[in-house]
Length: 122
Image (cartoon, rainbow, N blue to C red; front, side, top):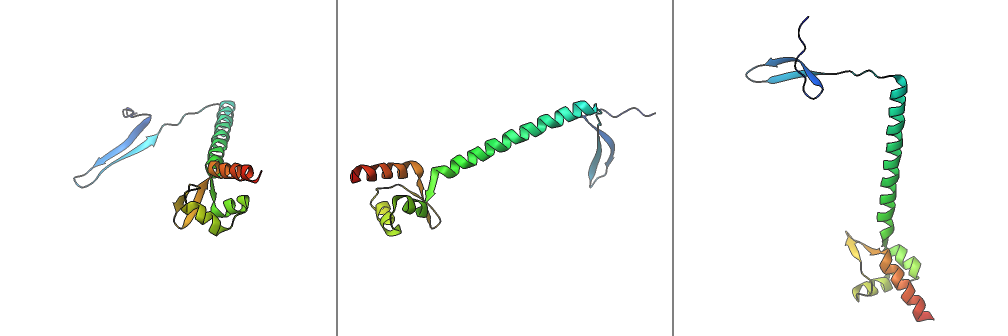
């Protein structure tokens, strides 16, 4: 029997063919055998970790989406026309960010406008 090649990070070279133009090394992966119960426990832990990561990603996406409102949402909430909202934007009453041709407003700024509108109506 031939001696096994020296290991490199758990992967052993199967054979090496070197030519002047092309150098190739083929590798084989080491196979590890574990009991079914240990494998099932491992897979359950991986599934639980995957679910946690998915929940965290969804929560982060929700937070990012909740921070910004488009002009239509703001007009509906404040009961304003798009032209009035544009006028408020032009006069600096409400801050906004523009992406392409669409304007977005931070929800904190809109809440502030709502409270100011309610105080002015009282």
